[in-house]
Image (cartoon, rainbow, N blue to C red):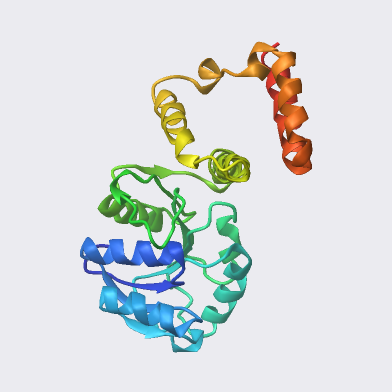
Length: 263
């Protein structure tokens, strides 16, 4: 099996990741044979963009593709693989795109299995720059792993072999810097909205924070009242946050953690 520009790929899933991954694969010359989504409209939309056949039933997925990419939710991976096993040859190459689920979830169904994980957050309305997105690949099958690496290089300048244990740890770190950070942005947005202040006031600060850690260690860039042990300012903040008890809880936890790390 040779995963190359001429190899046909069947994409299982047309959510945010599947949508952008399918379009990017198509743009680099890969043949997208079929696109599956239980939501027929999503399958049809992505199929139109990639020249693929849309299907909304797993039983309609055809055998013979060089690679089957499962871009579905973590909880659905095993179930989808079990259904596909009933319709595809046992030697089919099947990978999933999850950062948190091990590749071994596919092992009972397809011996030739692996991971093709773009490390990025995807929103349908925002066009990602795949050339800069780390593509994490892994397979216990050496031949498939090499082919996944080659496919990754068609999309990105940043391709890494990350095994299951490493990827699980990477995903924990990603939750902190993306999901948790975005939640903190939401808190800031809510506070300013309550006081009729524009969130745009914080955007230069957010950009500067991100820019600094591109060339410096985050711990060296840490500032603020918790880092300075400025209890007077902390108390004033907590007094204001009485109107937001849930936010006050987050504030206390982070302040305590920063204080403990910078003793």
